[in-house]
Amino acid sequence: MLPSHHRYSYSSIHDRPPYAWPKQRKLAVYIALNLEHFAFGEGLGATLAPGGPEPDVLNYAWRDYGNRVGVWRLLELFEELALPVAVLVNSELYDYCPAVMRAFRDRGDEIVAHGRTNSERQSTLDEAAER
Image 1 (spheres, helix red, strand yellow):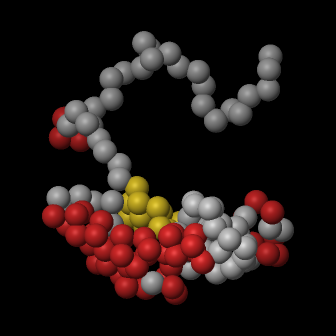
Image 2 (cartoon, rainbow, N blue to C red):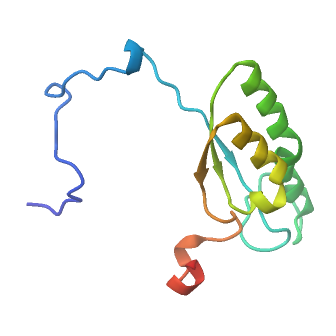
């Protein structure tokens, strides 16, 4: 037999009982908003547009716009539509833009850990560096 992950057994869709959402709802929607913070001029970073040499002001500003302007527009929309959200955040956001984090916490939204910063690759850290 081939190696397995042993996390769950095979089950055919035809053998499973029908799932029932609370209150007999027919649809569930999960809204996940990813908020990230990057170091300026170092580490990893997405090149969203043709930029220049480091420090890449164009791409840093493009990404940071969301933390300064875009997130507040989304918060207004979430309030208007009474939508709860899950916010996937880098912990650096608590230092960089605490007002943003406070706004989501005050709404009672779910805060989901998403690393310390997107400027670092956690998969390359040893145990001491992870601490």
